[in-house]
Length: 186
Image 1: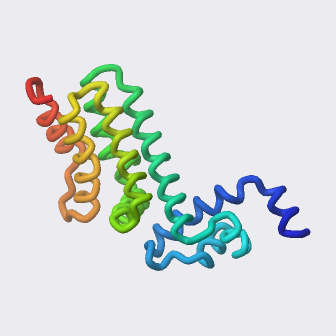
Image 2: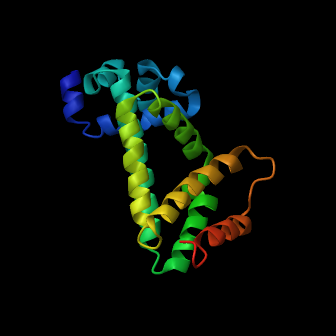
């Protein structure tokens, strides 16, 4: 079967390549991510990677955009489920302490995303959109300054907890969120 026939019968190939790129980044880091590793992880011929993506930078940008959209959608959905300010605070605790943000793979990819964004303006724009989306979800319940602080708190505690020998537990995180959102503060 020719490459063209395979491609027509594999409409998910492009998406698999993007997903595989994130797996390779999580395992090897951006500096060690190559077309060849991505192709192997996606189970596609090397030529498919270069067919769908003009450059490795383009592919990395697409992969990070996908990560940001997935994370942003999950954050927004969790916040949308909150019906009041107390539920929003609990949602923030869940996001920080639960599987949404605290998963090691997500944290590793976030580190890589920040480092890559610092040197690639297109990815910086992705990061800004992600932050804007998170803050928009938070401003349903909090003023803009508090929303910004909570957004930073979500990432900051997640990062610190991933390397701290005595990470904050759910109760400590809840206490911090309550302090930041106490009446008269936000």
